[in-house]
Length: 91
Image (cartoon, rainbow, N blue to C red):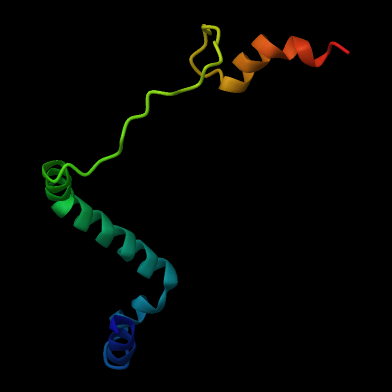
């Protein structure tokens, strides 16, 4: 609806022709979502906490004992390979 209004108004004022660009409308949509989330985000979180709506925390996790790495950015696959990779080459 707003696009139709901007298209109609662009006949009278050339400024409204800028709303025909898809990139501008995408940026404005993202900014609108950001403003809405900043305005009512905390209120929604407080409401959900008051209603006790949340996720259950599971206590069953991975049972594979990983070695401690000195590098913080090592992925789980490197640690898994160090533990169990030796069996891949035994044949």
